[in-house]
Length: 338
Image 1 (cartoon, one colour):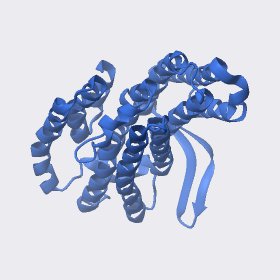
Image 2 (tube, rainbow, N blue to C red):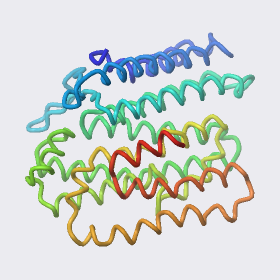
Image 3 (cartoon, helix red, strand yellow):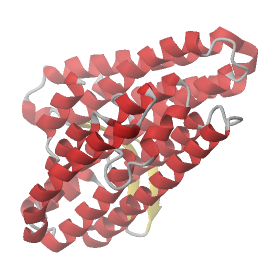
């Protein structure tokens, strides 16, 4: 089954394409069921891959599937490939499992909406993008999913765009995340300029061996931090999060469950060997910043009068801790107990 992990992101994409072509003919609720079955099928493949991986020795729990050669320009050689390892498969389990439940709920919630099929098209595209983000074998494939998640979040938050508040909320989320995306792009450029590769394995091995200088690792880590702040709604790029509640309730669930807001934490964890190479100055300053990351989200909901906005800003104190520690165990523990 590990050889078929490419199906995990492809199945939601297929559901989106079907709704794009046949959505209006399928109508309500069949368009919703098409999207739900596509996501549920992806979850089944992920579960099968998870149990197959459990049966392997620890040193063999990393499997790369190359779909095709994507970019070949000079020394830049990038494959469209997916990586199955404990981190990516656990993340894919949460994304596909929770998204399937949200799709089921949305069939009833969006019943009668004039843009029913379009909503499920966006949901499937969001799930596809999130899965490309977590399963990407290199930074560029992850960035493809990263940008897709940002675009889909804009479409979903502003789905009821005839309401001015929803349109404004969508724009705020889009612009704030674009600021963070600049950091991820700059980190990719710096990593390729320093090492000549965008592969996670090669970059992390260089960090382990000391080939990657501490100053360069610090710059890459800080740039990734800027991008992760935007996606995970951390200080200072957290302002879009309360207004994201303007979208339909399934959108709020999709963004705040084990999907979009966890992507920044995921990226920092994936690149944790680089982050541990931080310069001594950054290492000394990190402990003083963690309490601030924990306190700000706790204080921000105090002036909220809408329950959804209050409940969605409070939990991010623990993301701040996982975010700065950038290690696997606290993050996965938080995923499993949320």
